[in-house]
Image 1 (cartoon, helix red, strand yellow):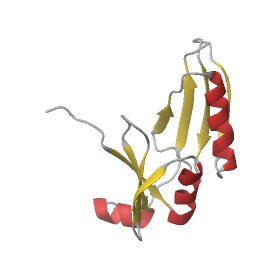
Image 2 (image 1 turned 180 degrees about the vertical axis):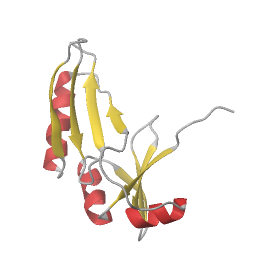
Image 3 (image 1 turned 120 degrees about the horizontal axis):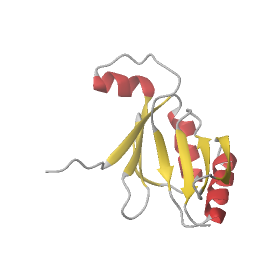
Amino acid sequence: MSLQVSTIMLGVDDLVRAKRFYERLGCEIDKDTRHFVSFVLGEGSSRLALYEWEAAAQDAGVSPRGSGFRGVSLHFNPDSREVVDEMMHNAVAAGGSVVREAAAAPWGGYFGYFSDPDGYLWKVTTYAS
């Protein structure tokens, strides 16, 4: 059996705010409970789940303390620069922040980074010229 990612779970400080952000980005809610929300991201994609930070730490049996770069970024790879720009714009309109403006990359692609309201990094990149 090979390892597969069926759901990516993010611990969040404010579940209502995070839920609203991802809804505004067009994510479809699959499950919605008091401490947990999951989204369908699209055909062939993993699901995205949001879990209250403290509850997620308790569920895993670890301390909820810690901050800074988490060593993880989520990536979206559309087919055009226009979609990269549109997603960056949509993220800001939904309540996120631009971390790195979208621009041409030395390796020939085009990318930018935004963060969601809890600081999770999303890289939006295309290899299209």
